[in-house]
Image (cartoon, rainbow, N blue to C red; front, side):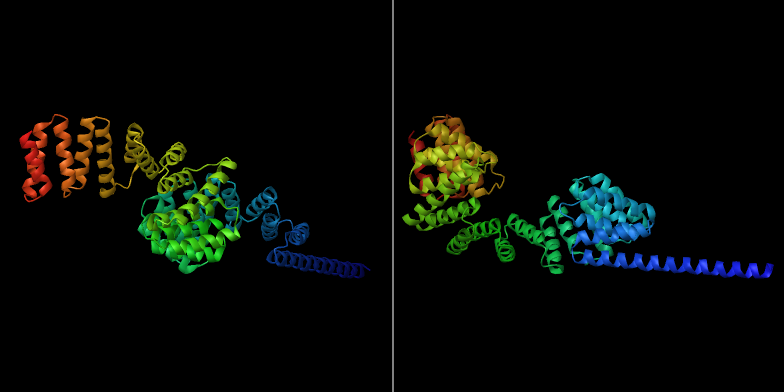
Length: 468
């Protein structure tokens, strides 16, 4: 009897165990099926279906790091991004498997998106502590350092990431950004080119390459990159930038064609209006055509009106419109517009130069002096010929104002920058003589004659001063 009871118990036990095992296997199969469905929905960018399937999987197995991780990804896909739910799931995934790098990486990604750079960096550092050979995580740590303004540390980190995987196009792009921030533009160009060689669809890298090429004066490369961008993106601001670059290259007719075509697609783009007006202005200055002057004024006037209507006037548009009036021969209109341009920051030195020129035409010498002095202070290019020409103009303006001391100083500056120009030496000598610096005038004259003894203008001046 006892043996029969034991046997019965064993049979029952085996049956129960079999049922439990079968149930567990069924739950596992169900769990795996739900995870697979959720993963498939993620691949199809169907966050609703993914969340439903993965929530079912979590209900069956609440200690599954993978299910929480993938549901967090699904929450991020949902529009608008459900960041709070995603953070909750990624934190739970990280808690369930402290050795997993991916949940930490995703926590870092979300905090980067929220501009919580220090917190993002901590998550990435923790992930790197688990897997120091994770180049993508190291790149992301470099990115948050760059976004936090720590460019030197960012450059070191991104170079370490590239040492681990030189095929990371985004890392080459970030390296280029760091080099630009450190004024190493030639090295940055090489980095941007490498990024594009690995991934030609990196629009931001191509945009930065075009911008950096422009700053280096490589207009051909700038145009080549902008042409590619214009074809790929069909964006009005890219077409405007391409038109401006072509204008700077002297390919004005081509610029006008590009900008005309873009204006037909984007008729309300103020940037295109201004760029097209600038191209017509460049043509007017080269050819003197009245039609080009008219079109320059028309397009720049439209751009200025549009900017003023939306309450965002720009100095560049006002300055171009003022220059167009100057080319048209209307100095009074030019002064009015250019005074608005120089009162609207940020201001380029050329706006003050043009204001000075317009004021000179009207005989407004005090305004001309103020404008040209501001242009001189703002001109960071310090090109010798341009600075010499401006200094000579200031010398003439100061002479008109009977400020002979300042006139002499400005002519000295002009002659220093352009020492072979005998006409400037003549003005230097005359200015010092008028200012009462007779010894300085004679010294400058004879120093110039020693270099150019046959110069007729210098010899005439020597004869005139000798009589005086």
